[in-house]
Length: 498
Ligand code: HEM
Figure 1 (cartoon, rainbow, N blue to C red):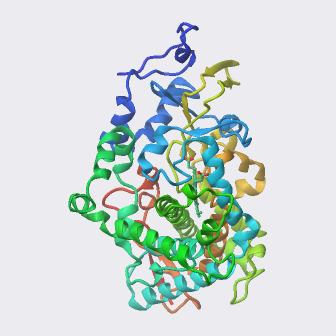
Figure 2 (tube, protein in one colour):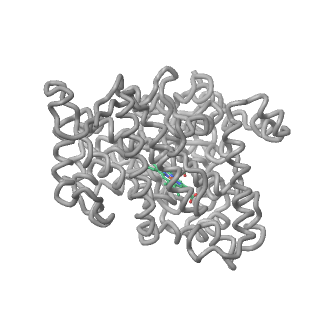
Figure 3 (cartoon, rainbow, N blue to C red):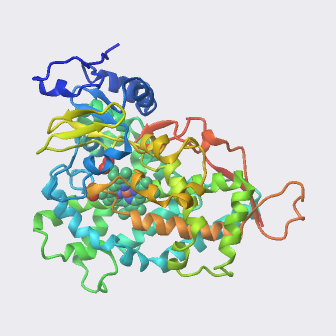
């Protein structure tokens, strides 16, 4: 066992001042659970925290904290308090040109400032028509599966829908995956959660070496990434096309605006850098939202009373058409369901490791009334699957899907780590909420839960029911930044009837 408790370490050794933490002597403990056991450290962490308390050292240079009250300090909102992503988050990204993979605080701020306005609440509101059109496309596909009488694996159309929305916004168009027969399953399989993530963290040099191989050799070694590689090259072509275009109306696509942003130096506008930015935005903007949407469908089809309550609420604002997005945003139960799904089924489940390069971080443990000094430069992380289920905040039923908790106590929102917090909080948070509101409302205004007691002709409208789907087909089985399901799972499947 590589751990021992260090309550009696000497004060003058700075790293050892992480009293109360367990110290692994090498990075191999984390690598064993991350890589050899495949994305299992997130589950082990829960046991370690039970044993050693809220601060646990998981590598010689990295601690993990399980205390939502530490969020404000670690993920500071202040741009003056530098919080950089730690190498454990940066390494597996392999897109140094992207904001997500930017370590340096000042460069990150600059890159973020160029994009922030396009993802403000007001500007995302302007995407209403496009999101509504995508919903119509999605429901059209549902009709097709209903007519075929085949179970539908919803993971793919949900990913396709969210990917189409983000791509239309950032590029003003592109291939619509929702129109493809299989919703481009090959693409999403290639960029979905894999062992490459922990490989990128723990055997970084190997993945870096692979990245330097000529593309043909790389594709021969990992054939499943062909579709993804073609997509990334296509993004570069789209950027070049936008760069050369002279007739794009103002504010119709994000990259058009960035290329014309005069406060950005030319080095920030190269095709390579913008291709990496575009790749991260499209991938981060699809898988995550789609995963939570799938969880919402699963939980509502599991519980008729919650679904009925939502349908009653939707009926107050919906006819056959969708109401304005602002109306959906005001619906109490719809939004409680979404918050609860984001809490229990976050689409990004990794350890959100940061470091504060300029200051020691002081953690105060209220239970023992002790403090721990985390020296400047040390990696410190928290993870949504752990923080979001903290019983002291979310209650003894924190493992249950209970939307009412958000109605009873909306203030808990400040402890929800699903989108991270602070200066590096998710860029797409407003877009994710608006998509979840529109898609959830659109699907469940139309579909009721199939009632076997009434039979195929006994229910007046279209229905849906789970098909060979249990919690193991929706809940995280491995942490590969995004949640991975068991290898033999086909994910969320439903039978749709017209
Ligand atoms: C439910 C849906 C989503 C979840 C749960 C989610 C979660 C997250 C999390 C946890 C981070 C911080 C990662 C870290 O620091 O380690 C992040 C960052 C980011 N997300 Fe999201 N995300 C979602 C949707 C989106 C969407 C729709 C977009 C599209 C624009 C997006 C784009 C980004 C980008 C660009 C970053 C990097 C931000 C920065 O470095 O400042 N995400 N997201």
